[in-house]
Picture 1 (cartoon, rainbow, N blue to C red):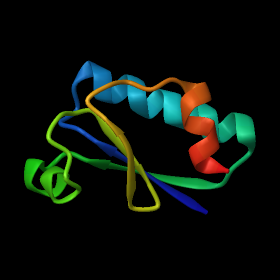
Picture 2: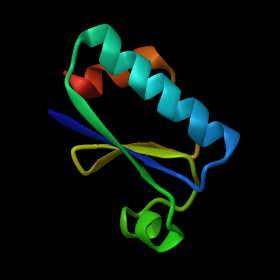
Picture 3: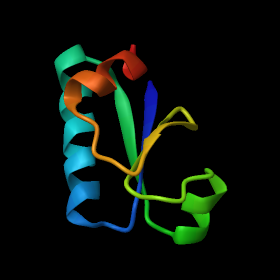
Picture 4: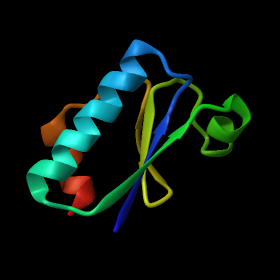
Length: 77
């Protein structure tokens, strides 16, 4: 099971990123757990200075932008 972490305070971009990640996982048929990390101190522990960010299994894959479904899929394989 993949652990997808959305790093952000709940802004519209964060919500879009979460939706894109969910769609990517569903299209691939990957089992996943989505965690929304909204505490700024926790986000900074990931080394992310600009939100939104996405981490898969604890590794930051992108920050400061909304990545699309196709960009997320390789990280979930």
